[in-house]
Image (cartoon, rainbow, N blue to C red; front, side, top):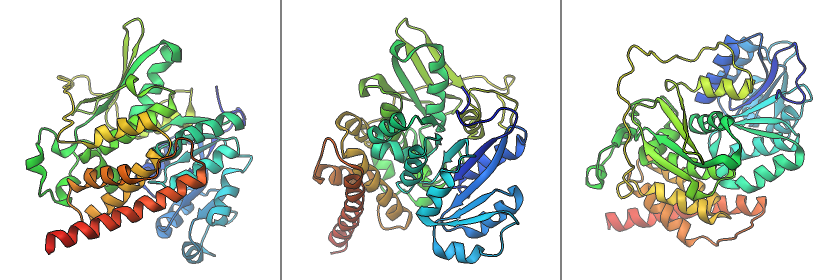
Length: 399
């Protein structure tokens, strides 16, 4: 069904949160390729005001939201005519609540993306979620809010989009399990001894996807897949035992859905985020778009293998958090975000990322039914704990 507030005969109006990131620019590529179907109604970014200003002049949105006062100051008086500048969280709330907005694409990286998604769902919008951290942190609260507000959550992650597409073949009750595929990242086949002195450059050398640095490191540790297990648990209402992970280095099969009768459906496409973005923005319509197509003349072997849980312990953290729920997701996500930033800054080893996440998760004050404010408080606590762990361990190494 089209969005409830979408009028037939005109393009769907998109509010794009995180427009200057990798998902945001891919989304704008889709919009640019499909002007009869899609319109960039509002753009929002954090600090990259030069890129946001350039996008505003190209796409001529009705609204541009700058999340910092400095970015807003830099853009003041430089926007196209009839483009209104909004500022901060209040401006973000005003943007996503606009009655003309048909779909909000939430593409802000990390825990910061929860705010925009929450505000859009409160406004009863269809939200295409490219920010997995939102569901990792607050999956039950987010899905409950969507139900209460009559809003809709659609997946943009390639794996979850694949599951969503394959699930159209049956009812949720017919699903036996889902299988998320993982490329294995740049260190597939390596053992822990091989990863002791991994450099940042090596970790960012992904074999199939071109992504931002944070998600690329997550792919290298398999934390990305751990977070996707948690996301799938809440997005599709599955138990952790119904979610499996398999390594597939070609990144052609994006996920499988196995039904109770034994049928297994998969979604295949080249590794190109424009396809799941387009599917979420136009759901349930399918039209010709800019995404790459499979070259069947070159397609030969598809490889699958089991993940190495000993070398990549982050994956088991994902299953543990999916089983326990409560505050665990917010703590794991915050710990991982901070650990990855310290690794990228050269202050933490590659193998220390899952180690510090394990330590912080074990030490946190667990609550089974937290409020949103409690999750935000634990997010801040977990980040400080990672910094404390990093200082303590650096001191012990250099002493």
